[in-house]
Image 1 (cartoon, rainbow, N blue to C red):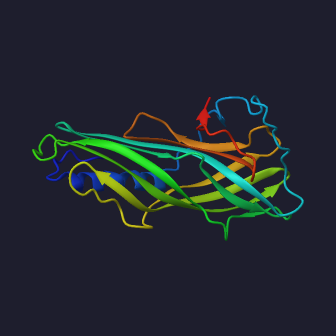
Image 2: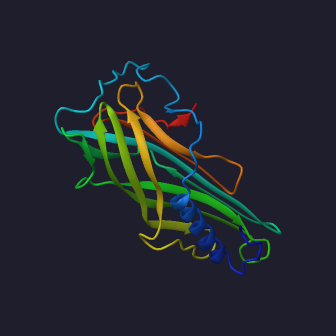
Image 3: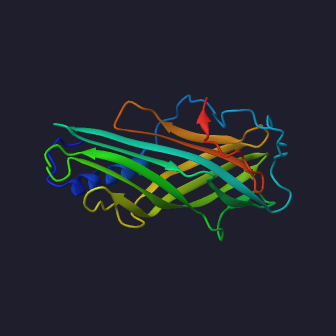
Length: 233
């Protein structure tokens, strides 16, 4: 539970809530939910783009794991002390990975880092020097991916780790957690390559101080998905 203690300086408040966000995202493994399959928001191929034939490759093949992330922390600590922070990816966002002829999956040896932006606002009614604090910045996020492809079903394990941040605050320094201390969700993802849109993901629903959606699509490298966010329908 979030304490309603007043914070004497906005930096301490921001450091606390960013830590909460990353700890929640690292540890939140929500129970399976009957959620809709993530989609691109339109039919692939409607713009004349040819959809590639998919399946476990007969030889070592490079694939791209496209993703869309949204994570929101929205806290009301009482007495007017509030905090809002939103993380999302900067499209096009993807990680490349190898699937070999034996079905083994890895991204070892492939550069796998991407920027994740965030922005927010904190209200500090008890701080005359900084009653309203805004901030924005970018994290670098890397991914470790492993898995297997059997009978045109790809099972991936992905671990996403926030490396460091470049945070800009409207008043005072706003320091986030140290490098390598926190990671995003560690997920088991399943992609059916016989479908037109091999996709998977998780959703942490709204209703509490933290909600998020992490959606992924798997395609052969070189096939460019339109630059639009993945959405649930």
